[in-house]
Amino acid sequence: MDKAFGFDTVVQEVQRPLLAAKIEAASARKGVGLVKVFGRRSGFIALQASLASEGVDICLIPEEKFELEGPCGVLAYLKDLLERNSHAVICVAEGAGQDLMHPAGEPIPLDEAGNPLLGDIGIFLKKAIKAAIPDSTLKYIDPTYMVQAVPCTSPDHIYCRVLGMHAVDAAFAGYTGVMVGQVNSHSVLLPSSVITQSARKVDVNGRSWTRLRAAIGQPLFRNSTAPARKKQPA
Image (cartoon, rainbow, N blue to C red; front, side, top):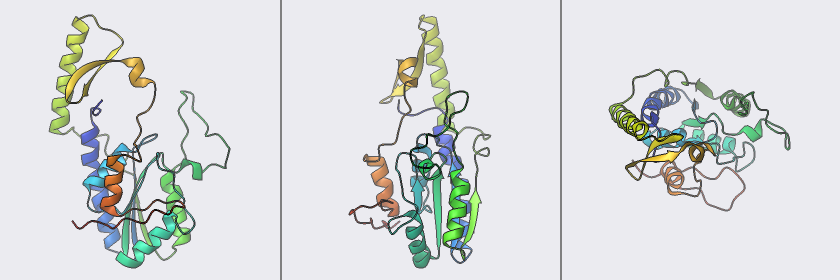
């Protein structure tokens, strides 16, 4: 499906904490703004929110594994950013970096519904940054419940109404076990089993993630010969 209902609203609302993190970080010497957003298994919100914002310097998502330590790690790049710009903003999806918080080979525990019990990557990064850069001024923002309790934007309101109308049409037509969605701008009925069989993931080799990395100049945070990308002018 092209998108889920509420996605545009969340991306729009996440701009507020990202802007607050930018202002707080820029107001202090070696200021770091750290914002944790939705994204247990996929990083679409972090990706799109970072692309929409002009202040994000590092974006971390579950699909892209990263190193924290070492010359190619996040901390080394963050130190370089602070030396060059005196401040930095990090947007991290809640499911990112889970492998860093669990010993190698140890399975991630599951809850009663079968969902992974995630470690708090926000607190984990906060402690790691303060330990590696003790003279930094770090502001950590977790807007999880703030972005859930807001009125939807006009495009999402219209999208929800359209989905509701087509759902009623499908019910009167006798269809069951289906979901209404939008594919290539067309409203369609899709089997629920197909929709729920797997989580949709960000393609880290695709255009959207590549576009974000090019826009903010983010390198690969792992041993690689790929050069860091230059940040494009606004």
